[in-house]
Image: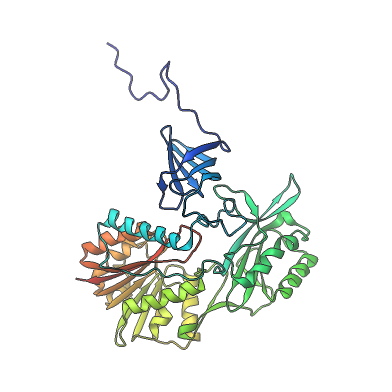
Length: 450
């Protein structure tokens, strides 16, 4: 007797596959609720639709951006019955530019969405709720972004240079003549940038442009071929008009055209100046960054005689203010150039009670000599992957207090499970509105040893 055939890869005769939904197709949908990233969720014919720019309770016409199995990603094209929460998007490019996804929500509703996202992750993954919820840390909802990367691409067929930001759900470039979330000093540069770049003789050799605002204004151009003297003069004149430094990134590391120029930002409440270079991680929201540092110090409550550990220290954004309040700070970072920059920042600010180390913080800490010293308090600010290997060893460091700054509630919740297992209690938590007009959530949590 023949064995039955199992695990057929093809549809048996007489059956049919669900038709794939083509990109660009328009579909009328009723939005049931919001996803954690702020997109509307709709259900139709066995598929789940995630719709940018839609709100719960609305009926919308959505354009398909992509489909994968039973999941469809789409963008709102038309709203038939607007939610009472909907507001006109303040930016003319909303819905096409991929940078700001929730401009149609009032700012207080954006904060409420982010608060729900954090609470849901902590409850669902870690099974905990903080003993106290902190009020959201927020600042102006526009004019906050002090750093931006502008996409540049030569369209050989159309013989046109595209300059702007990536479109929502695609690699297309949306031409941008103004961006309301940029800080004011970068606005005129952004508006005049496309016309200036189109004057350059080899547009096909241009990469991207980065804009910086801090203790100086700067424009960085990535280029894949040497610039002519005429092109360099156009760039110099543009930057001189805007009183901005000019940085070029060809082969090797980015360099200022005028040697000796530097980029930096101030932490005004602590009278600190931090220097950085393009490629270094810098918080883009200066106001919320200062409020975040102040809150971290308040929650950690460092004492003058304490030995404190700062993990994922970057340029010293937390370590230097901490050093003004404690006996010694040991600061650790995975990127060697950032370690060197942080040490230089400490020295230039006359802080000599700091020690900086380079270490791969995705690996266990057991072999690190500095980890054997013992610390009364720890601050960590990891990337989106979180700090699972680090938190597994925190109890062994002797830390009684821990402030965890997170840019991903999912990994914060995962790491909370481990911290609770080690005997820490989640005393306080709250969101940091580092990126208004987006659904991106940053958070801070205070843990104390039981």
